[in-house]
Image 1: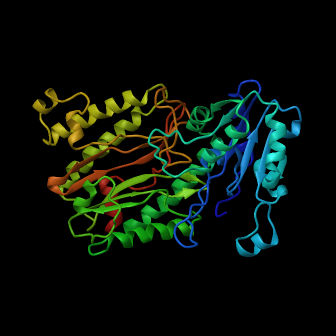
Image 2: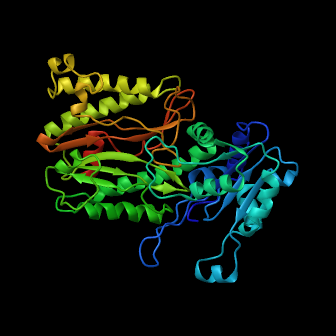
Image 3: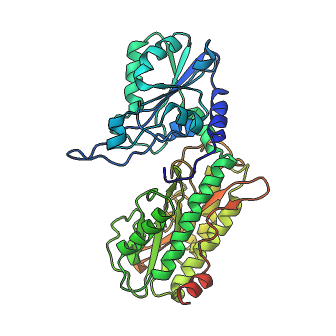
Length: 429
């Protein structure tokens, strides 16, 4: 692992919180993700199932976690199954977790090899009245590839057809939406690494540099600080490319007089950061760029004030839309007639600000959470308004990662410059 050891109390607490939501006699099973193939004998880097990691802290493939708080045998109330390490694995891939290491890392006392799963599980599941199974129920999920969890669902329902089954996802969405201090500390570390990367960019950005060269600066700073990779495909969009919301080619030259939109994040200990800044290639904003940038920055600052416990995400987005409408009117990009005649389902401001302002962030960049309930202390959101004007070749978005608190919010990415004067001073020093 590239990251510092995580206090196992995080995972012990997470399991305690989860089992409180299980009815009497219920058992839950969580599977690791697969290692996905590419071509020939190649594979993609392993990415752990976030729910399994949240409950165990294990970052290893072919892992199964079974939670059964009502098991007759106390040793079967938390069971972890792992691939058995051996000399061949150690030689070719590196040693896998030993039972002792797994217990130290997870706080789970009962650790068995995966080869023992069916025998032990048969004894355990025979005592259960209901089985909770895991699945990817993210609102934006699209999963054409069958997951290990999906294959397990087929297997268990074939072998134990008389059991009753239910979904773990609603419980996990509720739990993962509220971050503990352990998690906030890890996320702050991820954001601190990203802060170093953005500050590095301010020193190298200049006319003639390629977008992919700037991408290389990010990954260099990430990896040298223990972050394994980008947490999503980075967007480094200069000039009019910034008006393409998911521009990922990063293959253009950065021209004198243009802005570059950087939407870049990193992983640290499986937790994500997600930040956007816009910087002038030559170190100076034009008057028009300042106008639009200042409008976006005002909306972001006001939106962060609306991100508070007790507010509701759908209402919040309407409120941000009203803020953006005022700014677009002042910029004369829309007029009062546009607003008067707007479609309530696609307000006038959407012509220049067509995406949402905030999403949950945590173990996933677009983390799971409760969109139908009010915000609460411990939620972590991005805040990312933007204005995109293709006809002027200007696209500006400003984004930070915000922890909701009882007495005020924490901006985990506040150290990344975003005031016009500060940006220009650093770039020209």
